[in-house]
Image (cartoon, rainbow, N blue to C red; front, side, top):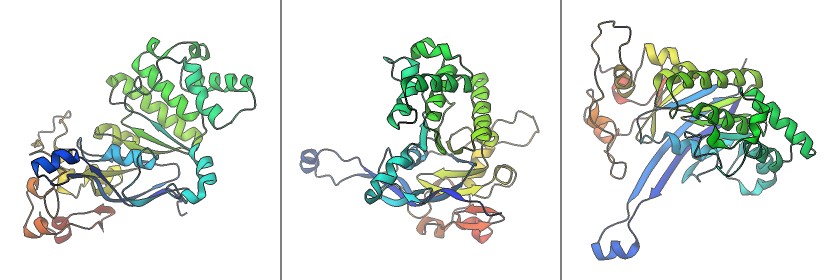
Length: 332
């Protein structure tokens, strides 16, 4: 049975102008400075699955997330959600109806909730905006249902966000995301600001809701243990580019790209297997002035002259999509 791609991202690129003001550049005789945050990224997310993006801070994960939900305009590339191009202004009517099917859960639950609004108003906002209920009584009932769905009491709707713990606030954010009956939810590090014990509760809640409503997730994280628990497929990003895409078992047991191996070797060996671990060497280069060719080559133990001059293309190797000259040539 062929899976349907709910989300299709093709050649996605985002460039930020981080130059000084024009007068400063003229006086100091400096050129424009452009930061390529996301560079030619392509992937698909199938209905009902969780596709995760991982990588070090500054790799472009959150920028991809913001472009997919429409918070940032791509410099280049296309984003199709349910076969509809979100950048096509000619289909404005269809775009408006599609917006209710796309939601986002942010990293910091307190920063993403209006501190002046009661919780019932926060959750009711998307219901009223998309006119999903007929009257105020139906809206109140729906808000109570959503609060119960995420493990809170309907009476909690009368409280303000500051009256809740971090985990409870994230439950409120999840309830708000579910309020518009979405198909696709982008989760931008939804548990990184929470305690470890609370993280597990939120992740289990998200898995249960996904199974119950057939939700599709784009899950952004830097925590590989969380991703292994949540994802059906994992994409590894480095300096704005997608370097490897694989299912969790293949990625963790047989990583292909040297950067993926480096990330996995840095995970603490809690099983005390005795296998020698290596820390991640070096730092992500300045994205304003990235290295030529493969941007990972200054940190890669397998790099050669081809790596320094030619950008690798993604190829299929044993079920993994890998962008690496060393893997392609069998160097190890």
